Length: 142
Image 1 (cartoon, one colour):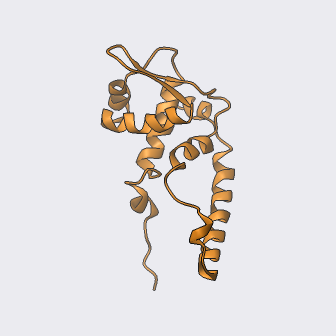
Image 2 (cartoon, one colour; image 1 turned 120 degrees about the vertical axis):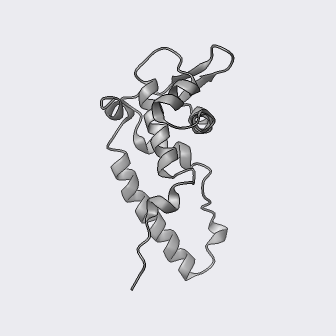
């Protein structure tokens, strides 16, 4: 009998885990509710996570031009992307960008080919679902 593995538990601490993904999506939704700069401390308090963690997540979103960050005493974060046009899949891609390697050089035999095929097929299904929703959809639930 196969042991059932809780994938959320496995992914919890990685950059694509629920904590990273939820924090990114919720942060964007919060930033979309205001034209004012929002500090990492404010986001941390609202989301119940450490401000240093918020800064790590937002750094990835800044790299992908989804968020703007302003340093200094009165600095903070502001959404750069259009919430109505930015899909949850785009947020996923911003987090996933450097999280795993898809190099052809790693595909050396039929087993590797099948695994690559399975992952590609799963990502296709996953992307279809995430592309149905935008930051605006999340913002409406706040």
